[in-house]
View 1 (cartoon, rainbow, N blue to C red):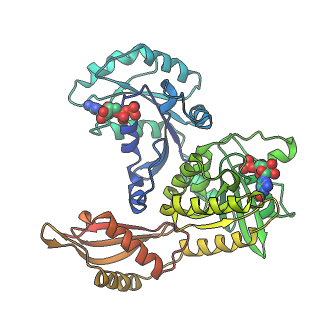
View 2: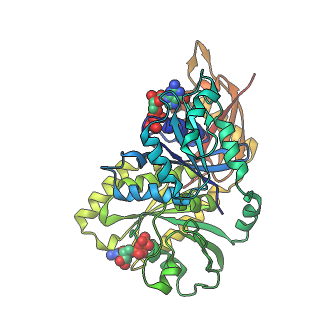
View 3: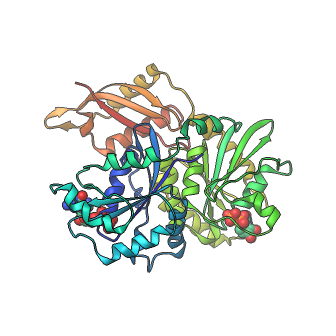
Length: 438
Ligand code: GDP
Ligand code: GDP
């Protein structure tokens, strides 16, 4: 089901995060609508034309890794193992340095297509700056500028065109999985497998267990009250059943792909540990995926009443930017709260795919503008003329008008809230995007 995964590798300061930002710009629409959501600097999605891809900045490769959470350090290796292509960034202004050779040798062992990108080449003779890096023995280097964008699209074009085309086929395969597709994501040991077993109950069908690589999730179809669902299992429940131990590795890329394949995401958090940085990373990625979202705080049975109070406070305080997502306090082990979880999944799915007529949209927009005028910019009032629905799951409202590109984020947030309320868009991100009318 996979989008190609492109890993960025290189020493500190060669420009990886600058390149990462350039490659993942398509996410800005959603991120801008959720003030307080910090972009994850390591994982993102982007697209070139109609071809989506996942980008991973493996920043930790070159000595930065100390002091980093070991779980995150594992993710660097995992990213290289799971990558379809590696972009090896070097600094064209500095020329080749010994650490570049060390990194070249390190990435060679993964046996992936590697592209050497010679960065900071703006204003330089491209073939001159690039030639130095031939000696890395990783093919013909390409001169680029992350900061200015020179040759960045060309580089991605090279990467994508060398990969086997499989997108169309996979869209089709996804449709074969019946009903509401629900991805269950979360850190190791939060209780994903336990929850999945609970949700599926006794009648699980064991027939379709064909996971491929570590990156593939398992799709588990089942019915509840006559309604079809497919759980996307990132924890590898069924393989564990046979082998009696955990052979699945935690993989953020796998979680991202599971979310992309889903309609609704359940982010599972371990209530007995409170909210961790990895939970927040996964939450950020869940929001960016645009899918319907339910937050389930597990192991509630295992908490004292003081702990419960503390966790509730922390959740309401630190998850304000995801306040559209309903929080469930559950015990996967005992099954407490799992029925309610299904109710929310159904409601969120309905909301994320609800069609809204253009006339209703415009009626709501008109009232919103009456209630709260857009600001004056450069002495002229921003005019919002009309709106149409640009997409579903997540709902995207496109607003046309003059100077709309200059509206402050707070006004966008206001519109998002007005639309969300008017159309009962619960549990799903909602984006408002603008088109400047001439
Ligand atoms: P990272 O540590 O590899 O993630 O590197 P950064 O993206 O943080 O960039 C390190 C420095 O190089 C910053 O000061 C950037 O502004 C600068 N930089 C990044 N890309 C370019 C480029 O294409 N040209 C120039 N001249 N500077 C760049
Ligand atoms: P996964 O790695 O996310 O799939 O987590 P597992 O489902 O394997 O659960 C990890 C551990 O947490 C196991 O020992 C489970 O029995 C335990 N666990 C899972 N859910 C609950 C719960 O609701 N309450 C308690 N007390 N323990 C749980």
